[in-house]
Length: 463
Ligand code: TRP
Image (cartoon, rainbow, N blue to C red):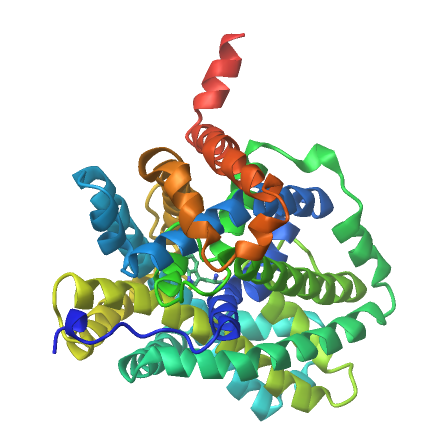
């Protein structure tokens, strides 16, 4: 039966939507990327810019995406098709599908590491380390092994595919309700252990005392990319999840809850990791391996560290899994809805394709380290193109579309459904959203994008 013939599924409750969307948002972006991106971009000053990006750009765009999906009850391409006749806007939906596909390919590589680390933790290898740097050496030897890294990528992708195959919504909604609270508790435990380590205060200083001299145009670009990535914005993932939402539920409060959950998890992960990085004397700017180099050292120093280490990597894996499922779900929804593929065919073909595309990313850490395109390895290149370009560009176009093409008046009518109480209390919040979506978000994203391709430098050079 074609997807249209059956009634479209909906979340069981508003809480179900919030936790599933938080499950998509909370993932490697919070626990793996946020700490190392903060570490490589100077600490506190970066965090402040990131928080501003989340509040001024992320939240308004998140609202716009969820609202678009809930209004049309369709996938990204279908949404633009039902609201506009222009091919240009249809292709914006298409760009989201492509971005989701590329993100999934490199995301699964790192998610595979988290899976592999469950095995390392269970084997107790962390307890054989005699020196903090042994954790780094161990990580390098694992990722340096093409068989290990491709094997873990394969396992992770197959698990993701099998869940999306057998109906994600119930899986995601139920799974997220159980997994998210446990993840939060565990992270807090790791954070407490981190803070109580001797020498951890340097880490807190790094996180909370801004050094503005470390901020450049690139920093702002990275902060914006991080805001989009961590909230799963700019490619229609939140739009797709919003399309399963009922008009009785409040889009505004749901979006706010997602942002608060996502941001607090990132900050807790930041504190947990930086207190121990400084206590152990590691380099905060060492890049993608950061959590795998630091956390094993924290586990060996905490009571119950063996159990905690296994649980932690299981949860990291599950957090990554709920995010990867949302990426594959968007791509699948498009092929099922618009091209009338069966769900099975879509998941098997698209998942295998993403797996295939993930292989050169995985090999970027060993066989292909010296193979560079535009000076970047394949992994770094796919990361850069989506994180720094496609997601901000997608967010820019979505805000332009809602504010200027679909029109804010129509959008506000939709926004009001399920959020009547908010409107009764006065409309200043709604007006704020209008202004942010119409002017702030597009202008700021545009400037950041211009800067990233060097146009602003050229202009300032003229003066
Ligand atoms: N937000 C997830 C994370 O932080 C990753 C993710 C899932 C994502 N779906 C997305 C990123 C869609 C961008 C777009 O790990």
